Length: 638
Ligand code: F3S
Image (spheres, rainbow, N blue to C red):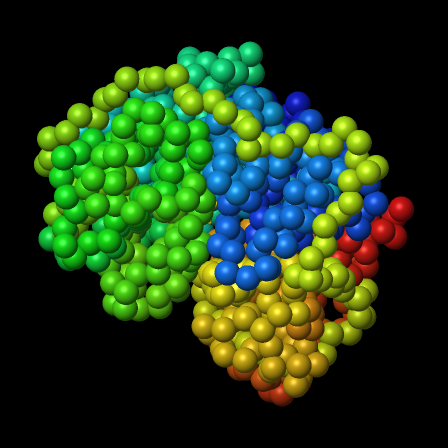
């Protein structure tokens, strides 16, 4: 008797044993990249010297950086298109939609494995597959046919009973879990959904939940593939991709959480963390300045239809700016066809491209001190582009209701139709380009924004550096390598991008690193949470950071540090964190001894004291670290 997660993992197991906590390696059937992480992933893939991707399917999406204020983004898009064509990868053009929405609609298949260079890749697991977010280098390795190494996860059953009431949405299910478990609650775990309540959730609703499983820090989340899945695939004209998949009756789960949907009420994640949950009724009446409906979390057909049902025939409040970004061109075309787009425009909404847009700080930064209601998945400090704004994460229903009243509004009190006909989806894949049949003749386009890939040097046997920054708990990849329209165009230009590292925590951090010939980062719990952005490891590597010493790491960032040859260490006694100050000199001798023991001693030369530390890594990770990162390691092996 097996749970669904282990059933799929077993079919893909290349190395190791399916026991929670053990290292395993699995075969990846599909890959996806988005442009902000994709350029680097493809440069790494090119450096591996493989002629054609070895996966069943690989797709390159352009959805993050679609503003074209200069040549940089357009250069990157041209590079991505040419690389995809040459190496056997499908290319989804800007305007075709957000990677996770499009992948769910057009490519995700029950029973398959998917790795994506974006932390919300688990969105596709709503389809009954194992979809995992990772750094770009791990995706490049999967494209080269190398298995993906991970810690075999614990499996948590999330048993859903009851039915969602009018005005309550699947967003509230995942916000409830975040309230119960926190942003650290899912580390090393897969959340597997079961129970009667699952049957009443559509694939789009399931996708909202699996999408935001990333905010729990989970490896992934998964729903069974059932009649609801089959119906969805039928509407996508790909019923032949359907297979029924579920957990065996009475199978083992490491933990069980129960949520009674009958008892759920609309919730909001308050600034600045997705687990700072309050009831919408508690916040009701708070003045709202901006409402944004979209992102890979809530921009599916049903999300926008529900928002439109509330907005129909109404006008937005004078104090509110409402923006709507459909998740895919398919959804946008359907809204045009059935007249719903007119509802949005008529109520006063501004329609944005089918891209990530404001979610990644690409425009629509709110005004100073604004209250911004967003249907997105992240509300980290500064991510909107306005440091003083407070971002509240809510369902499309709460967002739409509040856009009309101008204050936070509980939609359960409103009358509107929340059922609509399940129509055939609008299918048109003309903006998804198949790879070339004549790859030899495809030239890779490299504009001036595509700079050579920086590569680390092999690990020194002694690390002797200053603590160039000391950080608190829950530092996100947004803190380390900020996003936004100012920074993202340089994702293929690490020299320039590194000037923005920690710019909101410590301005001119890059200069501090240069003056001290690199350094060591010291931080609290859950360091590197948030996105899969490998620039958060790559840019510090470029600045000469050799080790990162924390109380704990977020999963993807830990893997990214190893991939780029930065030594990750955790305090054995967490109170030692308090004893270290910025600019203390730390010395780690005999790094090679990691092969004998993962426990090391850090000497604080400035304070004349020592701390026990542990490297949370596998034996193969040590080889990678010693080589100075995965790219060197792979090259050495060839
Ligand atoms: Fe894009 Fe935001 Fe999702 S940046 S992929 S819409 S989390």
